[in-house]
Image 1 (cartoon, rainbow, N blue to C red):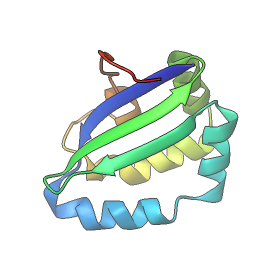
Image 2: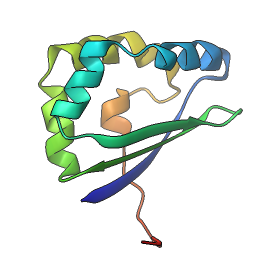
Image 3: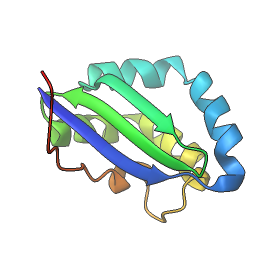
Length: 104
């Protein structure tokens, strides 16, 4: 099982709405993530907008590709695009950090 951690930056003026959106993620989006192999997926948002994502999956590239093939993910990415400082889509900007320590 791969443990994947990534960083994104939420625009300061959209943090509250970002939290609200994630308090009510669409049921079909949740189902698609599970079906695509995303497990123990968490997002943490710091007050300055730094977003830390963590998930576990058998194969991150395959899990990301599986989500990219879904219609619900396309809708979600369109709706969420304006929340981030980076210009590329959030799914494309998820660059995994290198794990340097893990306490099993």
